[in-house]
Amino acid sequence: MPKVTFHHGGNTRTVDVQPGGNVMRAAVQHGVAGIVGECGGQAMCATCHVYVREPYQDLLPPIGEDEEEMLECTAAPRDEARSRLGCQLRLGDGLEEVAVDVPESQL
Image (spheres, rainbow, N blue to C red):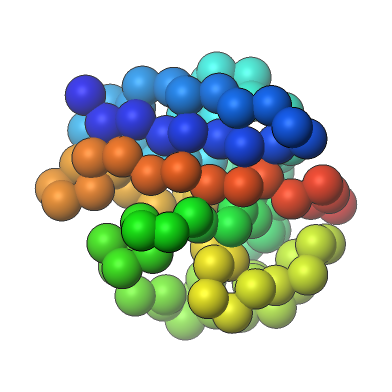
């Protein structure tokens, strides 16, 4: 089963994700602090902004137009190499695990 490891405020938590599930939904379902997911996963709010850790960055799909636009609106500073929206990171099909840092603020 795919897994996501969240790093936030000095805490680390790893959760299982159903194949095809995304980082944002996994965080919300498991009560991970720091992920809001206000728009429900539509890439319209940037409240699921995460910083993807190495070596997972090279395993991710390219950033789409909607995600690119929302990443310009994040509360925490964007990191060109690491910033992604958790709602756009689906697990399974080549991405069986990922580790992310959750920013201090989403709003």
